[in-house]
Structure formats: C-alpha cells, structure tokens
Amino acid sequence: MKIIQITDTHLGAPDEMISCLSPIVRLQTCVADIESNHSDADFCVFSGDLTDAGKPEAYQAFREIINALTPPAILMMGNHDNRQNLSAAFPELEKDNNGFVQSTQRNDEGDFIFLDTVDQGSHLGLYCEKRRHWLTDQLEKAQGRPVFLFMHHPPFD
Image (tube, rainbow, N blue to C red):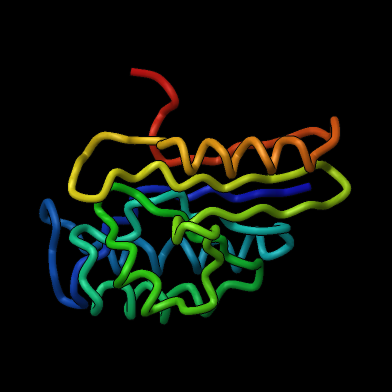
C-alpha cells in the first residue's frame, strides 16, 4: 500500500506570496511530482492547513490544483482552515454527525481514520467529547483490525 501525506500547504489567493514563496506554485509542483512518480498511490492525505487564512478563493485554487491528481485526495482540517469555506468548496467532503470533518476508509490493510482536531479560532488542537465519542465508535467498528490515525495537531500537550 502506498499513501502520500502532504501537510501545511497554506494556500492564499492565486497571486499571493506567503513568506516570500508562492504556495500555489509549490503545490502545483508537488502534484506534478506525484503524478510523475507516485500516481499508483492508494490515496493522498492533505492533513490540514490547506489554506493560510481559510478564504474561499484559496480553497477554489486548491481544488483546481488537486483535480490533476490520479490518487484520491482526502482533505483534513488544520487550524488555518475554515470549516464553512472548506465545505462550500468541497461539498462532497465527509463530515461526522456533528459537522466535524472526520471520516474513515477501510481496505485490506486496515481502517484509516481521519480526525478533525481544530478548535476554530485557535492555533491549538482540540478533541472534544463529541469527537472522542465518534472516534470510540470508529475504533469499535474496527473490531481488532489495524487502525491508522491521521490528525493535524499532535495528540499531546
């Protein structure tokens, strides 16, 4: 199994430079490399901070760039992201019953669980009781199969 994980792309508006770099050009280069060398990947996980400020135009640019990917893309929230704007740009994005951007995928290797650790408006991660309940349910459904957890924020202080 081949998984590609990309994090902290921090896209801005199409011509916006961030820290003297163009995140859009960097993501385009990354996607081109995946297509050239790793198009056989099972999926690509974008593990948060897709955008730098959660603006709708940045999500639209992100969508246009990743449309070139052969492997399926799994999008996750980071503290620089905005749930409402992300969901508007990607209406097909899976969410749990409480509106958190959390999902699972099962294949022969195990259960892959993608967690939403964002405390909107804070740079710190948070995994509240509602999300913990959802995770408990997913772990029970795994029934002893291998489980792989993905999250933007580290699970410690």
